[in-house]
Image (cartoon, rainbow, N blue to C red; front, top):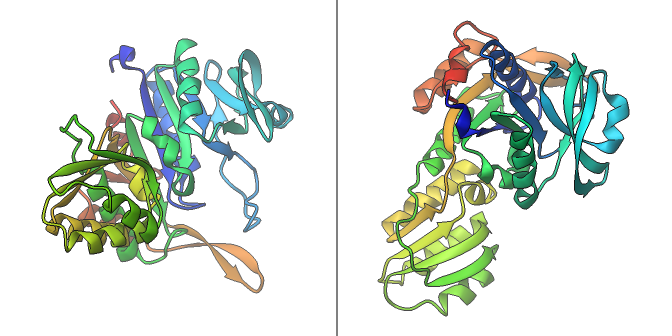
Length: 337
């Protein structure tokens, strides 16, 4: 690997218990074996021992000496790892200031970080400044906006999201298609807006659009109802329209990926194309057959057929798919290099 690249890797869980922590732990082990210096941060807070909904034990990341990690000051008493504080970021959260630590003794640390992209960027810069050549950002589908800063993204999905492998595969196929949308090649922006949330927002914007081909820059996100309203407005518009978003995260925040992708296909038929200023590479998908089953007012550990899940996902997407607990998963790390 070219250590000068300082890659930022986002690991995104589509739901709780889809294997995000297991995937991250696997990647950290692989990094150690390859003598790669890593940093770990999180969008928000992660690392509790017991799932707050199911009361089932959650996997934890064991950190090794030399690793860099961020956490909030009030999380420090929960750490079993030895550490030294390298810097204070000045970023305040509900759990106190975000600190940058170097691990000095193997153990556990509750990871915490900022939830805004404008704050994730300087945290990643600080981790790289202190020697991390690969930074892992721990995130989730419902707080994915800051993941636009990543170079590569791994999605983790599984039975905790949906116990039907076909539906899981359809969702990830839709997400992959969104990530495959092109970067914009047009430099001139015809109109800008912060976000489009509903039909009223769309009508206001369309009332000011010129009749010729134009680019509309959306700085944050567009919702699924707004996309449907755009589809309706495009039926009477004769000139092409380009919707420019910062990255695919603005679409993933729109709503259900499968439904969003259906509307995007209809928009293309009406000469409305979606482009991005930047698009992280969708590097791989990991799948987890586990799900918490509610029985007699308590959750128990349950699984769907792991072979059927893996097969359905591999048939639906073109990116590599792994179960990190199965043989051959070592190849996952190669997708990040």
